[in-house]
Length: 100
Image 1 (cartoon, rainbow, N blue to C red):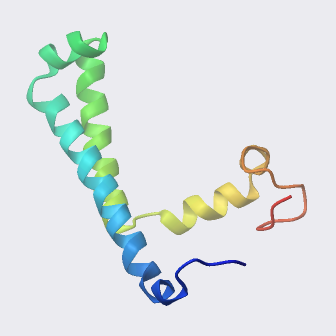
Image 2 (cartoon, rainbow, N blue to C red):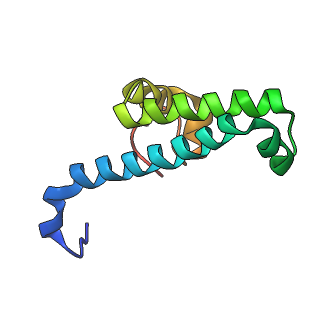
Image 3 (cartoon, rainbow, N blue to C red):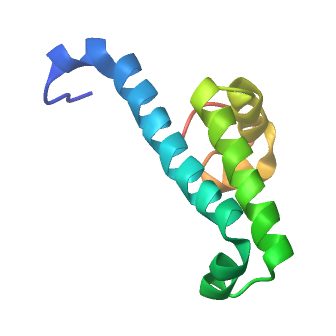
């Protein structure tokens, strides 16, 4: 493996945590805007206000789950075992964790 800056490998866990927190902030702010004004937001995305409220609550709850790492291992385990995940990520049957 050719790594450009090998000294930065010790910060990979912190980098992944910061990336996960940034994604959580984006989802949280988007979900909050859906929940604050569902009628106005539903017009901008072309959906019903009820669906916009559902979408906002799902985004807020999902962002909390991403920020705290809830069910991350379960999701990763499911992706490795599902054939859909194997096809999507270019893995062959019976070679869990390795790529083609």
